[in-house]
Image (cartoon, rainbow, N blue to C red; front, side):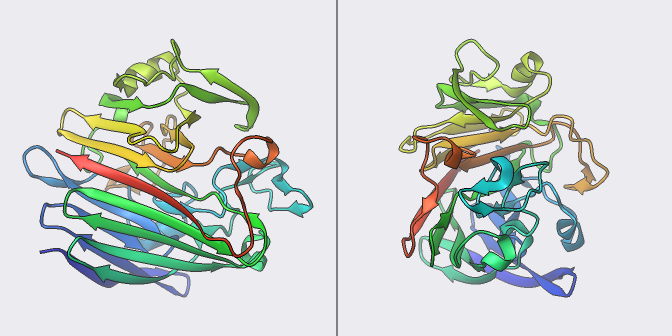
Length: 337
């Protein structure tokens, strides 16, 4: 029988962190916290029926309070970089050199959200809500944001993000989840296979901002049109990946990630126009993830979103949210084992 449990899970400063667990009889379970509307654990069975965590998670609430890598966070109001932190006459916080990134130092991943839970015959879910205020994040308007996680009995996790603002503002959030299908991060992602419905990537400058050019993936390290070992791709690109892969928002499946060792497979579909992939190459850190030190290529961040810095490239995605207009973004993660 599906279940929902809610419990206290430490504190950050004076704020109580609450943990919500959504479970299905098939062995899948999702754990979220109200700090940053984050997904902190995702249990999926392997071919032997052993359920293990397939996302990178930090040790405790205090670790999330100190997190600067957005582990499992709802990142917003805008994911990625905005050149110069400028949008017209609006000057946003410059928290990445001269640029703005991931909603700033007080973005959605660093705020406490309210939440409600729901159990139906089809799924168990938690919905987080946040009044995103200009005096907190620096974006115009009072934006009512929601992030919901819904786990059904068929092995599908659906993440839905909505926004509605009192004034014209920007809206391009993402789920910043680091995946490792081996289970409990026992092996690096180099043995994973990756397939993308992608023909082009964005050319990026030294500050990781789009130049305006699109590059064909054919014959390059970015070519994942057929299932490809991530380790083989990184051999061709030793610095790893922190890149923008262009997608068709109406694709049934945009990405398939597989791990032969465990038998797990994840298929992602969404109404987003790009996926940023970050291979954590060179990310050797002292803190623990899944009970072990963070190491290079231990996880693959898969960030479905509209293209970064779209506001400075006319003709690209429209991330301007008109007043009193509800916008919905959906990502579906289907699992097999």
